[in-house]
Image (cartoon, rainbow, N blue to C red):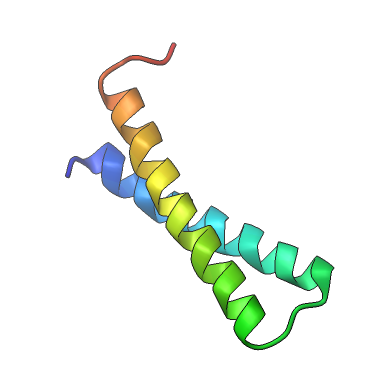
Length: 62
């Protein structure tokens, strides 16, 4: 993994878990539902961060 992919994964994890936590809070979830929401958000955030890091690395985005 290059530096851009590692940074993308770290930022994606941060953003995804924050987003998942916010959604769980707004829906009033507790316990297992909230843990699942945060975990799903984190996994999606990592995947998106790595994808975006690859796109930036290969200069496919402006």
